[in-house]
Image (cartoon, rainbow, N blue to C red; front, side, top):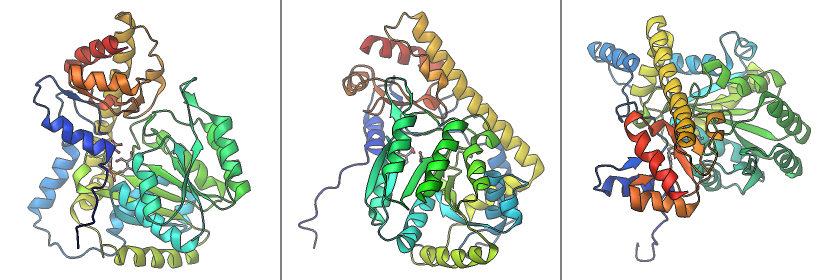
Length: 396
Ligand code: PLP
Ligand code: TYF
């Protein structure tokens, strides 16, 4: 049965993690995987989460099956976070939201549903994008293309290239867009860029699929939902995959959601019935713990404000590390200008380091980054910053 099975390639990011764990140097630093570490270099357990868990444990709640679409108090809290408290779409019953196994699960459920709706469509993702975007949509059966996005010369968005590529795709293509904190570049669209993109999507009847995995890590909860809100006002139908892995530091609990904007409550109930069918034939129904915790935090005024304060602290710590990196390298007389790092948003920076320089960082200094030059700024802290900057200066 298995004699002809070939070794599958490792996930480049998770594979790097394995190499990091096997490294015995005490000075090693992991800037590879996209995980937020606190000032002590640990993945935080948020106080809002700990409080909600304490209450849940004390309640000795039974663990029956959740509905196929997940916990309804969680699903509606997600909707308000994405579309805003006063959203007219929500009031009109035009959003389907189902709890998912992280942001990845939302993408996969959405992709499987779309395959039934648009079996011959092309999917387009940004160049570059999160590695898993291509693999997920290909495994759902779609051909996946790139649209131009990152412009290495300006360290910004190739707006003209992006718009031209979106125009050139076959009508009714599925367009995956990073709503904020672009992974891997850290380079986001401006509001004007979003409006221009929206015009092309409308004109070409493309189906937008907004992926928002870092809400609150850029400029704030509402600010980071700017693109979602703009699309909500546009009258278009679209998909949103969202994740609490980062914003609640609940990576392993797999807490996310798929939201789909429809034209009417009647459409909403038909769409929901089909999404439930996709879920049922994949994993039946989602797990209880993570969504209960997130739902309870979002729906409790005290825990909610505690969470918002902790999220602000994470966002500001990352911002501080960006500034410290720019300033530190300038003061050290680095041979290159790194001021672009301060303009990027979210956890990541496309640092401009070459594959050879990344390789030297790892072999000579025990500093792990992605071969593309992506570094996770959220893994820097006051202790490892100096050694990391010295190493960067040495390899450039
Ligand atoms: N989408 C993007 C852009 C991501 O960077 C990630 C990162 O993990 C995900 C989706 C997946 O989120 P999750 O870990 O919740 O599955
Ligand atoms: O890009 C990252 O580092 C995060 C974490 O298959 C991640 O999004 C990386 C690879 C992967 C799943 C999650």
